[in-house]
Image 1 (tube, rainbow, N blue to C red):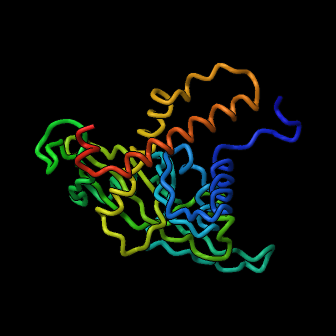
Image 2: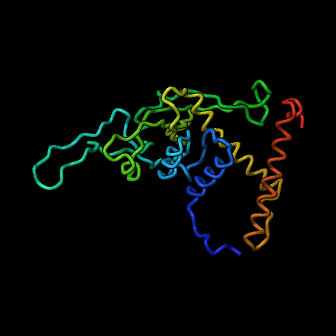
Image 3: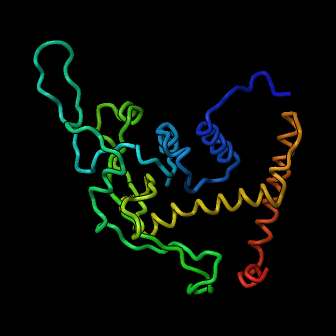
Length: 249
């Protein structure tokens, strides 16, 4: 029972469509947090920027960028053929290379929240912390160059987690948050993704999202809608209770 007009749409485009639909209801989207499945797609990041949205998105180690100080230059015209266009004199580097070049000394310790295990935190739980480095870079790639033709690549934040016991950084993010954004704010925003995973796990395991066994398009949408409403109800109930009640539940 899939409608004839419905065809394949990439995940990143589905995400942008859902953002547009949400905003059409008068609900503002303050910022976007996403994993590398979305952040590695330049078209997705460009779509967020076209909508004026702040984001912190995961990326893979192979994502390329220029250092902040890099500037395009125009080669001298030989008098033959098309005139040369501005280009960066050096090839873009991977984000992993840029962070390693900055060195482990550039990392700083940041605590972003308290976990669920017993520990020395204020609430009696274990503190979540690691070491991070934040650099100002110019994300590169064909789609970015095409979108910024004739101008320099825009400067963005590159955030990397580099634990003290690791020889190399282990996780990377790109963000268009303002230049004045502090390292703790960058880290805490990037690490908010655990809440998405927590909600998704609750929807799948507790509220039955993974229990669907139907075979029809309307049936699937009916099931997802009911699970979403149940999750929204549970969330509102938690928010309406005091922190002490929530902690003891």
